[in-house]
Image (cartoon, rainbow, N blue to C red; front, side, top):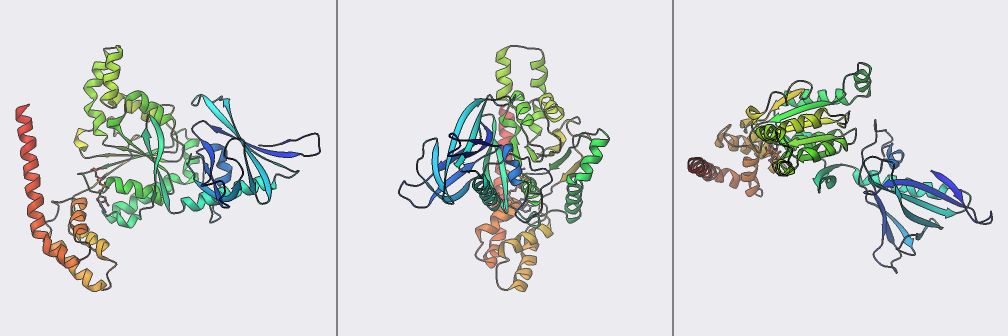
Length: 428
Ligand SMILES: Nc1ncnc2c1ncn2[C@@H]1O[C@H](COP(=O)(O)OP(=O)(O)OP(=O)(O)O)[C@@H](O)[C@H]1O
């Protein structure tokens, strides 16, 4: 919103107001008062800024840019004070930045902040230029990055900005991968959205990735986020209770990936579910919270009114057999993808990924075949094979020489683990 203020017509000022919610902030920081090149750091997750980033730097537009983001934008400028109202120079204009707390009309946030940028003069050009520069820097910062959100203190918080992981580096059946990418591409198409809306069908899609630990389920999820330029919200169900889960789902933006890890936890809590239904005591609620979500809590969150349309749900589990049918029925889960232990092809490809920078491509190819012939197929996860390769990352020959001892060592470790678990079960 751009308004006019001023002092009796002699010194008109232009004010640009953005209403940001309390968790969002625009802060200004600089390393020292005397520094000629200080920085403004704009940190915002506000949808109020969405118009600023409706266009990508390559000129194309994002279908619906409503994803809250945290942005760190650095603009060289001179700041004359670091206490609000902050006065600073930008393009030979003296701008003023103010932050006022206001009561919010939003049901989700109790307090809002009104942030204003103002300057003396009749034109708002300089203010728009500043925001445009923020937008450009913001988009440049996000180039090639995936924003990852996790839960902290019961709220979504951006945890990292990860470099995009190339889809080609996640190894699994090529046909399945191509079909999955096509499916997601088609789902995200604007026409598909309209198709769903016209027919009154909820516009969302769910995928279940299942298989042993270390086979690439999380890697694929992050890679999908990068490939489709979506933010990813990662939730481990063991760490939250039903109440928080519902609220977290209601706060998801419209276009994002929600990754629910280890969903079998919810099915394990089924008995807790029934017990809780018979008890209203606050003590039982506290227990429930500590034990993670219940199945009905999860189903409610997935289907609830607060559950955003347009979101892509990915669930992962190591134990598909433990999942309740209701959780993975069509409509909740549209595709199930199995991840397996490493076969010869994957072992070979991992070898080439690790050593591909070497000069002699033909030699690496030959050694890759040799290595894949030595590692037993479908016994170790890609993560395990990768750990062996990384131990020898400077020498492909030493990786090959180390295979036999490594196989024996890992087998021994697994046997011991099984024995420990067996004795634990007996002593129960
Ligand atoms: N199929 C794969 N292709 C490429 N790398 C893989 C693959 N599987 C595992 N890795 C590597 O192993 C590590 C662990 O993989 P990841 O976390 O994706 O496995 P996961 O199946 O999600 O495991 P968990 O079930 O324990 O969560 C990552 O560093 C990843 O690069």
